Each structure stands twice: as structure tokens, then as C-alpha cells.
Length: 307
Figure 1 (tube, helix red, strand yellow):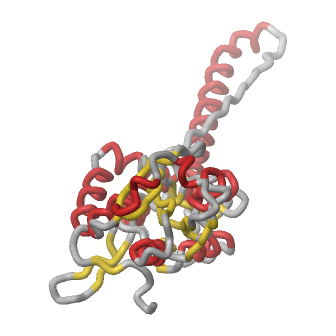
Figure 2 (cartoon, one colour):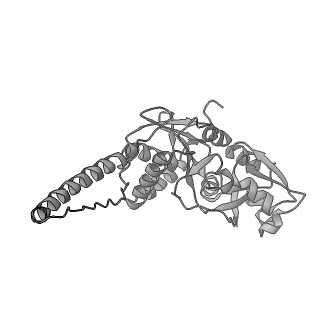
Figure 3 (tube, rainbow, N blue to C red):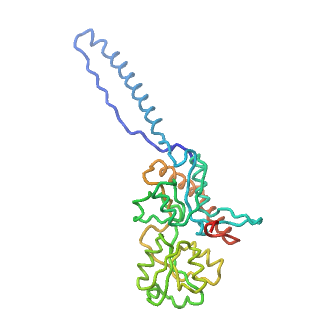
């Protein structure tokens, strides 16, 4: 990615008018004078247009730290973001969100700096403009538009209701989740809270900071079910056979994930969208997702390392 955007077009038109003086001798000179003036006007027009194009060939991208792209993420959301544990036991931040963030930084000619926080911390970091981007499987919920801008969709996803294999028969439809005798979980600050409130208003809603906490409560039998993004739910179900992705959950908002961008940074937004389009066109996103799913099936750590 380039630090200066490439896609800007100068649109303008200049009209030059010449008025010739009367008299025979001047009339004879008029064509030459008009031609010279036209050449001058054309030269002036070309110079001004070139200068305008150079000025607008891409506004300088400003970032929180010059030369760096600072990105907040919540590493408890495999295969989006998590820590992959290497053979030597060293955890490394991984996931297709992280791969995409690196791709964007490279495209913009910036050094990537990732700030791991809880999911609600990602929203706060963006709201206070402490970071440039939030890359955490964010849904472009209109309710968040007051605190951040959104990129184009980079990954098409879905929503699911998850429970234990042992009680999946209890949930034949979403109507079965709307029961005052059950407890359902959702991640604090995520759209899954809205989905739980819409589909299970009579159930007791338990909001937890991390998806890992939700999974732990499910496995311990303390939650009857939970609302989780589909790719994440499938990843957990693969690692924990006791879990079951029981139901698809309709979502009226944008079905997919976007990058949160520090509000008002239009140059950065344009650059991010260019990078996303290029990554998708080159098939890079498919590669990122495939690699993340492979890593997520191995030994991983989800959540903040200091916790």
C-alpha cells in the first residue's frame, strides 16, 4: 500500500475568452495574437491541472504515530485473532484479521503496531482516537457510526446460537431460546447482545467481556446457550467437540466484518478500502482465512496474555 493515495481525480474546466480590437492592421494581426493567447492559456491550463493533480494525487495519511499504523484488536476471537502457540511454546498473534492488518500496513508503507485489548476496549480506543484502526471482526453496526467510520466489508460472515451437544435438542428453533428459565451469553459491546435481546428477550442475558469466558461458562454448564459469530463458533466447536453450532441467527445489519477507522480520517479510510479491494482481488483474503483456520485448529491461546 502506498502512503499517498493514488485514486484522486482533478475535475475542473477553465474558459478563456479573447476580445480583438477594431482596425484593419490589427485585424490582420488578430489570428497570430489569438493563437499565441490560446497557446498561453493552454500552457497555463496544463500547468494548473498538473499542479492540482500533484496536490490531490492522494492526501497525506495521518496516523496516531507517524510512520506507524496502530491497530487495536481483541485476541479472543479465533480464527479472526488469537495467539498461535509455536513448537517452542512461544505465542504469536495470528488470525486473518492480523494478516489483513499487516497487508494494509504494507500497502500504505507503514509499520504495523498491534494493541491487544478486550473487545469493548477496541471500541473505546477508536472512540478516543488512541488508535488508527480497530480490527476485531467488527460488524458495521449503524449504532457505532458516531464513534468510528467503517471500511468496506472484507469478510462475509454470519451469526449463530451455540450450545452443548447434550442439550441441542432443546433448541429446535430460535423461539426455544426465548425462555425465562434459561441463561444465554453474549460478548459485552458486541452485536450479539442485540441479537440476544431481539431473539431471547425473556431469557436471562449474561454479558461477558471475552468469548473465551462465554465458552468456559458453556462448557461448565453455567450457560444454556450463547450468541457467537459463525466462523468463531465453528472454530470453537472444532476444538471442543462438546459444543454445537445449533442455530443460524438472522441479522438485519450488514452480514460481514468491516474495519473500524478513526472517525474523520478520510484519507486513511480510502487507503484501507483500496487495500481491502486489492487483497480480495488477488485472492489474499482466501489465503488469510485458510491459514488462520489451520492455525486455529492447533494449540492456541485466546484472550490477553497478561490475563
